[in-house]
Image: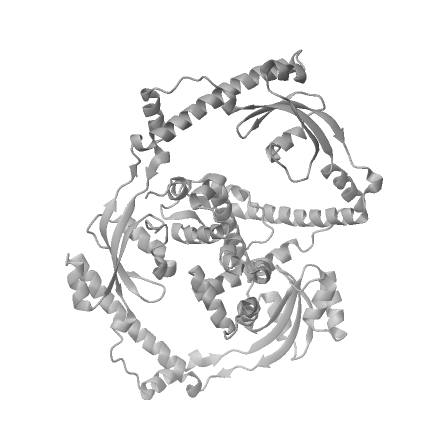
Amino acid sequence: MLRQMRDGAKSGSLKFILMGAMVLAVAGLVLTDVGGFFSGGGVSNNYVAKGKNIKVSSVQFDQTLRRVLAAQQITPQDAYRFGMVNQVLNSEIQMRILNQEAQRLGLVIGDNTLAKQISTLSEPLVQEGQSKKEALHQVLRAQGISETQFINAIRQEMRSTLFQNALVGGVSQISRKQAKDLYLYKNESRDFVAITLDDTGVKDLPAPTEENLTDFYETLKNNFMIPERRSVTVATLKREMVQGNLKISDEELKEIYEDDIELYRKPEKRNVEQAVLSTEAEAVKTIEKINAGQTIEQAVTDVTGKNTAYLGANNFAESDLLDELADAIFDAQAGDVIEPVESPLGWHVMKLKSIKEAGIEPFDDVKKTLKEDLMQTRLMEELENSANMLDDRLASGEELEAIVADMGLTTEELKDFTMAGIGLNAKNLFTNYGNDQSQILEAAFDLNTGESAPIMELDDGRFVTVRVDNVTEVSYKPYESVKADLKKRWIGDQQRAANKLRAEEAFAKLKGDTDLSSLSKEISIAKKSYNKIIREAEAKAPIDETVKRQIFTAQSNEPIMIKVKDGYMIGEVTNVSLPDETKVTDAQIDSIIEQESVGLQQEIMAQYINAMSERYNVKVNDRLLKSLYGAPVAN
């Protein structure tokens, strides 16, 4: 995503990809069903995916999916039909697994490094009269993303990118001889001659009877499902309502400070600038260049050709570090360049920039923070007391309206939304509730009409309760309203079945004594030649990738029958040729070597994710995905 943001800023498309790309931030991963995630089963109704330490709620995923699809102007229902919903979810799962693994190995992105990266990303967004922060907030508001969500996403991506670089950094290249042979293979060309039997070419089929159509309606009934919708009232208790006259004196703060003096004893910290290299040889070369006068970042760039292994400088206590690193760093003196140290992340090249001695923070330095913390604690106590009172009154059966009036709560009515929180206007009605949308929606769909949920505490400190005002049960579009569509589908099914029979009959003749020209005349369908089809070139209709694969697995002059989008192709390969190997250029060989290097990295990542899938045991809720995106949105 970081690269996409920089490129997008130059092209003016940043506002579309800024947040939508978050879910696709795992660079180089192949969007396939790695690890068998899409096997389904055993997942809560409000999670589209769930595993060990990994939960993807339907609300979180719906927000991510819609941002990804917005730039492409594709509806979620179309994306579901095309398989894109599973691709986006699979990428989200992979990103979360990588972040879990990076955290498990102790990989940390420091605040200074993170701030520098966000500043770099924000710079192209600035318009005249704006600060970087104002420009970034403007884009985030347009995307419906909080600053916290954005910061967490950038931190996760930086961590997963660094982790991937360490994982695939040692990939070797294929030889030039192998690259040349591969170039010849990729550029093999074939000529193909075929006749195409279209489903629509089947005529004179009997019209469906009323009984045919009503039976067909029952078979396809789920395709006409109108999902359940609910309307609720959300009552909110905010901190401003109970803040009142809380007062805390300096004398009280001083007493607390002295009682808890050990809390303000700070360990020695060391400011370390570092890079993580893939091999010991790279680390040694980097040290040599640093000792010759280069900065760590310059040395890393010279040795590896890029600066992705450079992590910048951060402050660490001894307890913050892996054991392998702690000994080396805390045995060094300020200004020392530390010899390479190996850890599970790779080979660390480090420089100790400064040392902050251990000591006790003075009262005046901590007074403001201490007061804020104490105020927050007492405020939360007041809030919890009020929330418990609210909970008790709801449990006693008291009407929500009376409680709202007595306690001064705010209320919001949210009408006719799906399990994903989407209203009749196709927009998310729960954006005001951030990451807490899933628990609010879960409560809304667990209750009966008129019931109120127990008090829920939100991430921002608010307390809310939800009362279900109305439930519109799952229903189906009436038979008469879809009859025309049913008839069209029924006729299409009959045409496909009849066309398959006539294609099989024609193919049997071609495998017998009838040649393609004679068959063409017999069934009155002209044959067509498709010349110079190249194995690795972009497929062009009607020779799509599926058709092309079968052409390149066929023997010359051997009859083949291929299922195409709306019918069948029957034909044979008439010529196979390879490029002249004496004319293959160095540039073409270099391109193949680069492509295969990337491919090997992707394969390593795919194998790693596949291995990790057993550890995290992520299951996808196919039924929920189908209910959210498989049915058309009702008007």
